[in-house]
Length: 401
Image 1: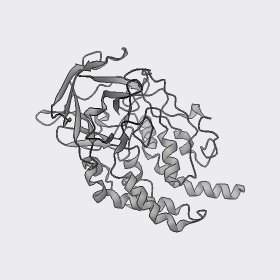
Image 2 (image 1 turned 90 degrees about the horizontal axis):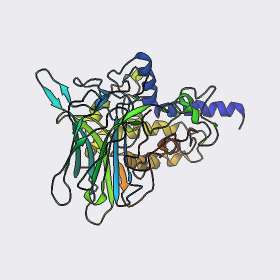
Image 3 (image 1 turned 120 degrees about the vertical axis):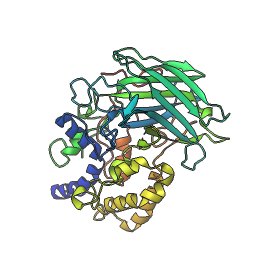
Image 4 (image 1 turned 90 degrees about the vertical axis):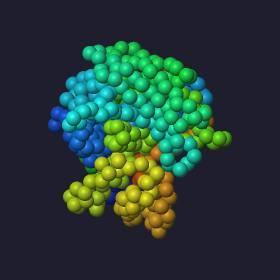
């Protein structure tokens, strides 16, 4: 390929690559500006833009994980992270931020609930809900933890009471009814070359950067923390009948109003306006729909958001028409991708240890997988390997920085 062709190819893919990184660009802007504000990007430091709790990183979900337990094959591990980019030296949100107990209203406080939603019959409706609430934080950061599971196969409501992990302490694991629960600060397991995207046409571009593990120094999220809720429980509590497959997504509620939700990585960032793909950009006059998306439930995704997904995919696929040997098959591919991407749920076979897009493991390179998916294989890696120093036992997420 000639230098001219290479530059042209890079120029074609620039808007597409930026689409996958809108959330991370926003994270940099927040760090530079000194704090979170109401935002229209996801998923790290994505304040859903509600008042209250406008700008609350405590209710902003950064990532959701679902994987088979590496120590008990009959168990499933679910993890939900908030308080993104929480590290010493960071202005926003700083290293010692607790989980939300409540959000002040005009006359009273409403309780915050962190939820793992599980669909076990394929209708994108919550069948099992694992709800986690926290008490008022102590000076060392520890909080009472109250977990409640509703909708389990036997119809019983399971409850567990325990404590979160104080700042700087070894993991506190609460174990009851065969269920293990952890809540506390952890190393952020997400890994990604943000500068390589920001400088995609200049020095340090990730295009042609080498092998999938050639640039560990480019991981923007190295040495940054999150606040994690991890639950390990028998998969039989989540499944239904003879099927081992479930769907998982996270949500935060105050108390019955849904503040944020997330299933697969970057769905809201790439496909829900405002996003970086015309005609959905701010500069195109497209109003933001991200808060509306966060308020809705997966069961309505196809009806409410399929048009946005198809619109964005159509633009992305058209960028490759000049080099695509068969652009005529794009509409069929786009429809298939829209069926895969919506509803926004992590689909997971609890009997399988395979990684993303089967659930999502802590070390799964979701960026490489999604790059290949949305670029029709033109870009397959950001060349950043995992930096995780995961624990061999529960809660598995690495110790905080």
